[in-house]
Amino acid sequence: MSLYTLPIRPTYPIITCRVSPATAPTVASPPIPPSLLPPATSAATVPSLTCALQCPHFESCSGCTHEFNLHRPVIVDEASNFFKGLGVSDFTFDSCRLWGWRCRAKLAVRGSSENPLIGLYQEGTHNVVDIPQCKAHHPNINAAVELLRKGVRELNIEPYDEDQGTGDLRYVQMAVTTHNTALPAVERYRNGRVQVALVWNSRNEKSSNSDKLNALANFLWRNGGSRSKLHLVHSVWANFQTSTNNIIFGNRWRHLLGERDFWEHVGGIDISLDPSSFGQANTRAFDSLLRKLHKYVPFGASVADLYAGAGVIGVSLAATKKCRSVKCIEINKESKPSFEKTVDRLPKSIEGSISWHNADTSIDPLSWLVGSDVIVVDPPRKGLDTTLIDALRTISSHKVKPSLKGSSSIIKEEKRPWVLRERERVKEFSVQVGRETISEDPQSLPETLIYISCGWESFKEDCKSLLNSKSWQLEKAHGFNFFPGTQSIEVLAVFKRSLKKKKTGKKKKKQG
Image (cartoon, rainbow, N blue to C red; front, side):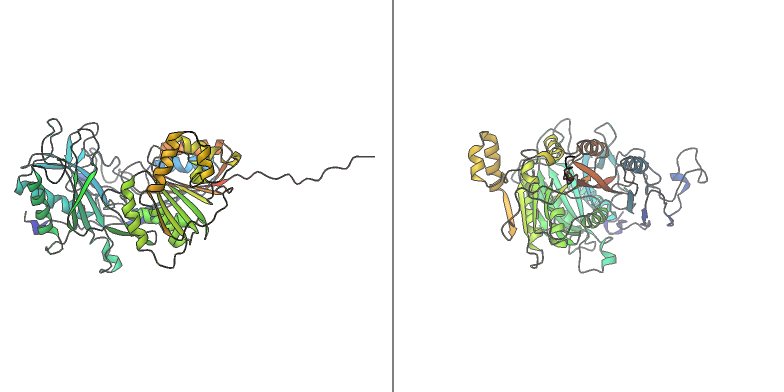
């Protein structure tokens, strides 16, 4: 097939549906070809074909686990019942794109230069399944994968061999930006361009196989870059990794070709994401979650954003809710440049204090909680760190002292050297934007906790732990279909701190 006749924009329709526990979508959907129906099943007996996957790779690929009812995975009913049992009867579930939703993908590259396999591991193995027609991927990711495959073949690039530790190309990360203001809004998603990050099996760009890396990058840019007929590729990056473990990326990155800055528009702001920064795979669902989250943060609030990444949530709140201060706390120092670029694009009218801190939230977590009205947590799938859970559980009983960050008197009292080193490190890697930190009441405690979770099982445990402490009450809960085709959902839960009631009763007069 000629490169320029690649099916880069499939014609299968994209639908949008929104459901709550008692509703089902009424939108139309494409008919299911008989060849894609499960064995021994007819179209008349398959339950709810309205939102079906229709992917030829389903049987062998580990990416999706469910073919049917993409709009409403079974876990939604479990979540609805869970929250109902905790007194929240109005749990909602939002479902956006069901196909072509994934705008960020990490794919393994194996096989041979004549027959490269670019895809995901088969369940329980390290055998790579080729997925050129993945229905979850944004169509332009599939097109960029085909372009990469052609380059590997033509240039004799050797895919990585895990057993021998040999080969050139280990993985590729594809990320789609749909932020193109030169196009009408309705055309931006389907015309998204792809940032290609090649994970190269060498220590740096001076290694013996660097000529192959540059040749592959030039091939991608020449045939898919801004001057090509496709205009498919946004930029090409290289990551250098020689470790034999399962960690995809190494610590060294290099920008090779195309635009250096990668922009997206979510939550009312433009955000910058370097390839080394964490980014949500489902851009539109994430935007929907952010806009819902905004409703639970008062104007002018002081916010602490824990597990912040590049600070997208915190900066979005600073811009839309005019927060007087926002602190973003993140352990990955690689997210700092993306934060700085994002805040540089904020309107000059934003007067609050916005800061980013390279810190581990599990160390002295109370110091990040005090002085804030709202705490936002967005932990990894394993849930909150134990020390943070303990601090939240006992927060109402704390006799709060002034913040541990920047108080010389407390530093003198502290005897643990590792804590002192951590404070100095946090100070060194902090970024302050806007006005200096707004004066806050160091004795104040947060009134609202907003928990964003991608791990349902860990969230249930954390939720029960918070409620059992009697320090927090669950007020609202919403679900979002971040990963159609799986049993994973994103949860947004809003907790309010339980306030101790003051005794106001009058003393009874003694009877004479």
